[in-house]
Length: 198
Image (tube, rainbow, N blue to C red; front, top):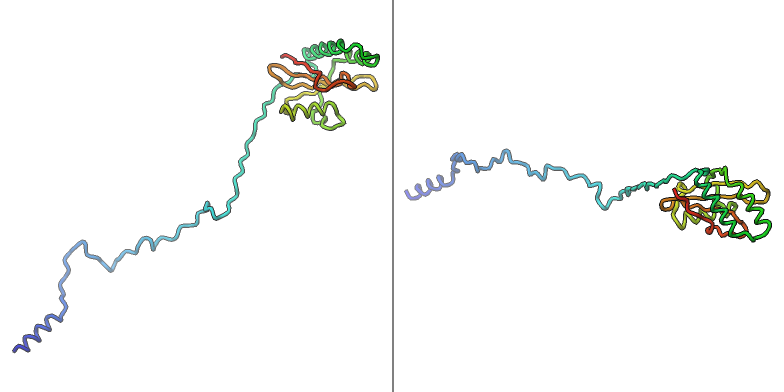
């Protein structure tokens, strides 16, 4: 009898329990288990701006505006009047330099009209000295741009006499005017100048 009871008890314990699970929201439904998000997402594309990849440098071009200042015409009446006054004073101070100098003085004083405007670019060689020297001086040492220079030429109608040049540029409230070739044999280029007031 004891053996029979022991066998029945063993059979009852060995059988699985078929109880329905309670409706619990915390129960895990293994049939629809979600795939982890990290596994579904593809790897991000490589960053084009990553430091290990060579990228071309962006070139920044800045335009520097040049201030162009209006200049008087080569035959401006006021300019020529001041030029004649300056040249007459120059020759008066140098009245004892000989016959050739006085001859040049005569022709120059009577020729200070009808100047022609010249291109600065045509006067950059040693063949155009002393004009080329003066242009280089203004550009390099004083920072004057070509657009703010005016070169005026008066041809002296006498063989062997150098032409007269006026080289002017803005200075202060007026213009600085260099008179070149007044006395080619003695003149220092930078000495012969005056300020033309507007």
